[in-house]
Length: 327
Image 1 (cartoon, rainbow, N blue to C red):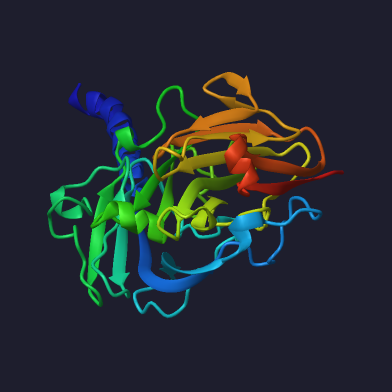
Image 2: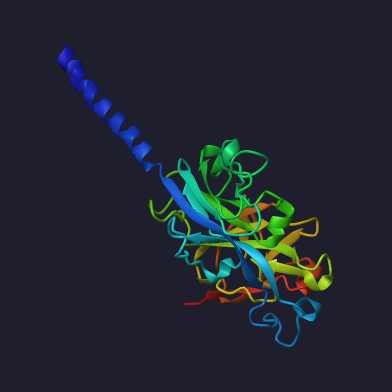
């Protein structure tokens, strides 16, 4: 009887062992090498209003180049070879990606002249890895390094009403208000467990393409109107390039905002609509530190406006174009 019983139990035990082993091996350590660096930034590299060629940039075009601080991604711990970024990412730091169940390790090097950190929204961490408010990683001195370890638990990933991937912000948090205005921010995209295209391609299986857009007013001149740069990913008046897709593609837009009370934005696409939590719209509302992911199936070819619909923000250049290529 015992051998017979054993023969019946062994397949079940083998299945359970393989299942749990597979579950464990699917969890990955995702490593990123990110440096903070000083750089000059041009809000309109063309020097022109690319939304309306018959119009100037008015006061907002008087000065375009300023000293900024940015997060730059590298391929390894030598911090010599930078990771290329799509043009549409603009001033954003490297996009950090993971799947639910993974561990993220960010090897941070501060190449600037002031203490900085990296503080993530939404992920699971202990006090030393918070990147803010005390702890070992809260203030990394110039020339120093620190490795942040963050867990991507279930509460870091998509909820029951979310899409298959969601977006979180990260930014420096030593003097957070100053550092975000300096340009030290980026995004984290978390894909649901088992929903990525592959272990090496963490874009969800159910979409064709993803874009990220940060809507933020940078203050470069202590509140003077000429220094209030109303940007999408750090560009103004259509100078953000690279948003391109094709007719019929399913595109996920990760929308984020930072800044002050003036950074209340109404994000609008011409020619298309999006779904957000089951609601059909072509305008999404953002407040400072908002993080929203919406889906679109492109239905109309053209070179379309993508902008904030707040009147003052439109006038100040918070617009760009994105291309939907036809058949």
